[in-house]
Image 1 (cartoon, one colour):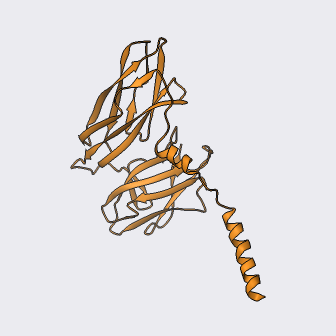
Image 2: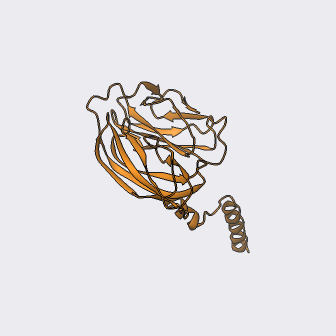
Image 3: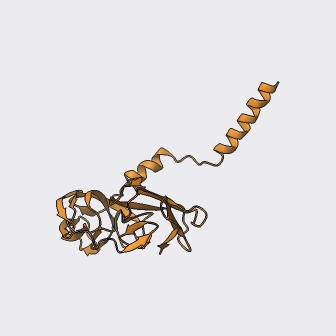
Length: 242
């Protein structure tokens, strides 16, 4: 009898716990990693760009050919997975060929990179027609003393804030300026529940560089707060959410 009661209690607790989680369909996960493009008369010739080795202080530029196989003019717009990558919006007449200028700035992003550039028909970022993969390697500058002007919870930061426009993930380049290893975390009491924080690497050794990865969950984009804490910091510090 007692065993049956325990089994029943366990089943009730398990059901209550599972009710807190929503299963995400595999199709939804696949659409995030490999977004589906729509048929269009707007044709992007290059789907892969290898920028090779780029100096951190340099800016790499490439031209991507865009064709219009239809009869009417078509506008295009672009969005990238990193603020280091951008491309020009434009338009091409029916039956003609144009070029889209793509720019990559490696400042603050040393090491390998692999980003995506989304090309949309029109100016509303609604009809995705092509995804361009952009990869390469940023050669770190030798002198990095002036790269981290902001101090926050024992860390040196490239910038004091993040801004979510069309993205849900932003990175802040950081460096451990102390003599001790630092593990960064979000102050759950002071920070908004919609904001998640982690660092790469998870533990920053003295003098080691890395990234703070700030993730926005949900649709709320106003009045968000993020306070970070670290093992050796005497108090939390705020990172502005713009």
